[in-house]
Image (cartoon, rainbow, N blue to C red; front, side, top):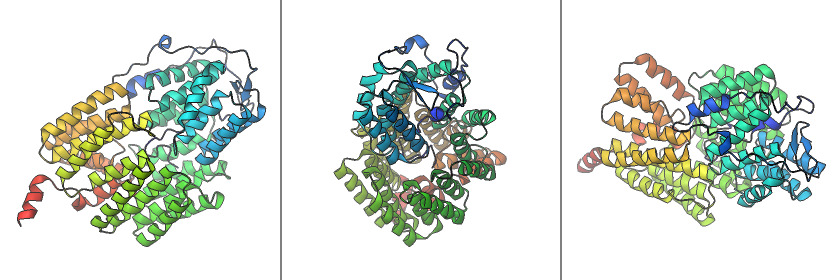
Amino acid sequence: MNRLALRLGVLALPAWMAAQVGAQQAPAPQAPASRVEQTAHKEAVPGARAAAHSAHPKPRAIATVRPRALFGVFPVATRSDEARKLVEKSIDQYENVMLDDSVASAKQATVRDPHFALAYAIWGYAANRNQPAPEAIKRARALLPTATPDEQLLVNWLLNVQEANNLTAINAMNDLRERFPGDKHVLYLTAEWLYFQQDYARSRKMMERILDIDPNFPPALNMLGYSYVETGDPDPEKAVSYLKRYASLELNHPNPEDSLGEVLRFAGDDAGSIEHYSAALKITPNFYSSNIGIADTRTLMGDYAGARAQYDKVIAAATNPRDKLHAQFQKALVYFWEGQPEEGRKALHATLDSARRLKEPYGQFEASLALAQLSESNASAIEQLTALASSLEKPVAGMSEPDRNLSLGQALREVARYAAANGQPEIAQDAISKLERWAAITRDLIVENNYESARGFALFAQGDFANAVDELTTDPHSPIALQQLALGYEKLNAAAEAQTIRTRLKYQRSPTVEWYLVTHPAAAPKPAAATTASATE
């Protein structure tokens, strides 16, 4: 599974705890710490400075419980050795994207030791991917003073990332680096953070440094597999090579085969994609990502009947509303792929109604955004997107703050894009100004990317192609932004640069709304002039 997984709310559990027993010794506290992560944060989050350590509360040492060593390395405050083992199991399950199992193991750990802060933190972190568990987060926060100093740093990281307290989270990461200087697992945590902030180039370099330390570190191999198709210079052969090494090390886990299935689909090898997704399901028959991956690949193959049948299986087997609604959403998009947009809109409205009944905010956002993007006119798209953005200006029940930030950023970027294309620069500028303020408040690089690409769309509409391409380069995971970027380079007669971007765009291949609009330009909403002209013909 792609650790970025842009279904919103995707931040993978730091894998730095997964050291083999006895693989390293605890570092001396007085050793000098590398400040790589501070430099990276300064560059990756515009407008944000790595705060001084004095701004981050120092962990308090609690001596009431003799620390036990998680994975033989990391000291945690639990009286129960069984609870410790269950947390280790939960971490391993999370890293291999066995999310329901990870939550179950963490819950069991809290039964064995109701005062184990890290167990609650991991429970909440794993649950956030499917069905948020605010009660677990609250309990972890309450138990924080009882944890060991190092455990407090990790719990602070897990909680603050979920609560969008980015600077506090970075400070916790900095302190972990001081405690474990040069450690490959802490380096992975830093690289992973940068990856999810879409700073792919720096993240890739750090991952490769980890492999210099340990050539067989599975999480880094998985991440590098994706980075070599998702970043600026795609190399699918190298990506597959990393993932095959990953699979050889994790023979009993479905995720390596799932990752191969997804990356091969990006590369256009649909038969290979189905083969590897099927191999993952032989290991774990209910592995959600591979089940829906087969359906997604069949959609792109044009096997619409097969895709619908597979989506139905996923819907029936889904263990939580969020997964069920996403499969229902993907099934609705099949109508668009086969040229039945009216039926597709009906199906999307039905999905939205289901999400509202279930009070599931992620499903509501996904369906609402798609209905706007797949409207018949730019005017209708702007109206719907403006309403969607307004609904996200305050906290949303059941949606984490980082996910709300990203959702609002995406909605406002689309308002700006459609307004610029519709000849309404005032509306576009209003959305851009809101995005600028939101990026400054959240200190989130992806929101910053949305702000800059929104400016790029507006500048493109004004004919300022040189500045437009500069802004559009900041949104590297949006097929629509990449397409516009390539067009901008063509306007500037920069053929080589345009071809580089089109190559990058090629490996964004997924059955998403943006990919559909890029590959079916005639299906995009029409600007006001075009709508008026067609009505008078």
